[in-house]
Length: 480
Ligand code: KG4
Ligand code: ZN
Image (cartoon, rainbow, N blue to C red):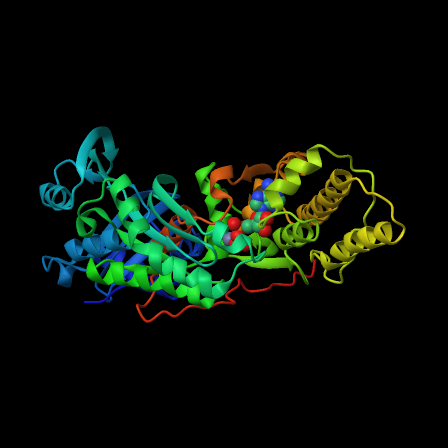
């Protein structure tokens, strides 16, 4: 028997099954077609013998109907339908249904699958009039173990239901890279190798996991973008952990992790627009629905965090310089005006011109033997970066009607950005969802949040999955 999700082409078949099973049909084919076209309705078929239908709203579902053609009844098809359905509904926590009070066979079947009777609806059914027993199934929590090692943080986390962090261990190697002014790939991968087992052990211990096979639902690991030698360590560790414990594996896009970490602040609602600002990437990403990412704009040269780090280096600050620039800027004034780059793509960014302008400013002062106010320069530089981010986000919000604005990535920790972006969210009456400060920079909890979304949509990866150092979302140009 084959269990499958129904498509619009199955409307006729579904109609026939209802007709055959009940000698009566309260739905027209057109109504069934409308339901098949509606994202909240879902139908699943077993061959052409029977189907189960439900309505789903986020993480709750209602089973509407189970029907099996007469000639196939008493062959455990209903049982098979429920069993397969339960396997498919990842991320659904509550399933409700009503059943005729006298239908003992059906009630027993549901009880076998873990449903409990919670109430009675008087005279719910007609022909003949009868009470309904309301039954509820509540799923256990789903725990995901997640691995992240794309750059200079070795991290493992345990995340519950995509939004609750049970543990998030981050071993940073910043000290080892500081004297080089940036990440040295070879040094990074060696550190990941040294740390990964210890970090895993600590993450499991903190989350009270002593029997992963039983307690964990799935394993996620970053497979790109990032440094190939670094990615390999976390990815191999994740795949091995999944294999040894017989758990499903999910390869995760690091950038999706940065965006979906907003779920740790509050539940993301769609459609959403995400401003993803990290050390390696700066993108505006449109999310029409939960697992869809469309890049509408990106940086043509340096990422926002990279601009902070490069200016930091020129000014003699330690890598990574974002946080220190923010602090020094507080002691200075934004009194030097730097240009905002004009890009061909209306939502694109460019920071290399700004970097050159700052360097030129320094050189000129040096040539003229003039002293500069370092803090004023940093304050003005920071303002120029944030202004560029705000300007393009504002433009995107004016063109795309979204319900929520998400901000993620290491630079999302920047206070000026956090304060300024609230104004444009208010301007467009869009709810703002900023990643919590502790999940802005690289960490495995965010990978757990993203893996959970894949899990909900039954998107698992093969254990042959390789790293993809330049992984990105598809670029979409929207002609509005
Ligand atoms: O997301 P992330 O941890 O790593 C990448 O995936 O790239 O981002 C790190 C970047 C660094 O460039 C760092 O300088 C920047 O985030 N950053 C900041 C702040 N905190 C970290 N930039 C500006 N202001 C901050 N407060
Ligand atoms: Zn990152």
